[in-house]
Length: 546
Image (cartoon, rainbow, N blue to C red; front, side):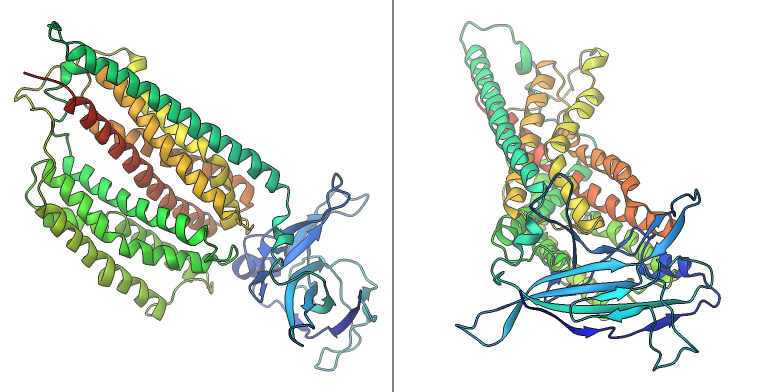
């Protein structure tokens, strides 16, 4: 295979420490510590480090991005030292299709990071030649040891580029990134999703058959004594406490649900967004969130009217600010903290990006919420299938293992466990810079999540009503919604693999994970709530009550 060196040692520069140590510079500007991944893109392909596991003799694996250094010690020494990768050897793979065009397509982008103690003679200037670099027609050799990170140490950074022709085509250039050991795990995860879907469909079928049997028994003419869930027919649709907040939560959850289902089913599965282009994905999420404001306002206002409310404008305002409000506060604080660290990542104020965010929120999302609330409040409210008694029924004393808190903790963990593997992949792709490329699994995992939330809350709601406890409104929302709490707890555990030491980086991580966990809480809670609402309406609409 033709291989040649096109350009070696394209630029050299010296970092001379004045007031800050090199380690401080690395922490502030390059990342968190020496295990931070440094990622660059070429023709939208992320740079990758190719490696081979001892158990894999044939295939190579790829790590997206490269570490900026390592921690180790010399043989015979006990003290650990920090070594920085100050030379990057890039390999660019290209493919020529002479039958169609004379130009070439880039089909691969790899890097081999090296730590080199560069040396040179005399005083540093523009014409300085490194004595440690010996170029060759195919590669560069170094005649010195690794570069140790020391206070006020002079470090020379270099790189070289090799262009190598490859038989990989443009259409298959992502295959190398996809051929990892995670494929087998995804296969088992897909089997797990299918088995879980079948299991919950079976459980729902059993519950529906049992409900049908109860309805047939309760509707018999000689059935004089009321038992089971029929006893609470006069209280099951009683207005819950803090019903306004429940309406706002449900409307926000509908907005989250619409955003996620559209992004997963239409954009990801269709391949509209590249697996490495997270910025494009979040831009699409932001636009979808604004468009789904109509459905958020519609659902919250309609539910608010069903509870007998009249001030729908207040509900619309609270719905429009329920999730974006806390998110804006958290992002403002995090932006200020990163700006105080002299980082290049925060949005300057004022800036075009910040103006665009404010325009999307106040110019599109909030007006759509009000429009949806207007139409949702105008339509006729859904009538309860049974009348509500004026005096609330006394709820029997329940044993400790039948308390609502036990069902919340037990039921909320199921949705989290079912999609745990996909959540882990998403966290790894966001925080550890790995590719999350199998979008079809996203859709299957999301369907499994919906089935789990709906099935778990319906089963627990049925048994709660059988215990003559009619306080199912908030219980149905929190049973599946508490999985967002489990997500945040797992994010705390996942934090241990991040090697984060700076307080600002910790706040950034937990701030963003708090936002994601709160949105997950809203989404899963809303799915469980509406599933129970439909289930209870079906049950009590089939009863014959005098």
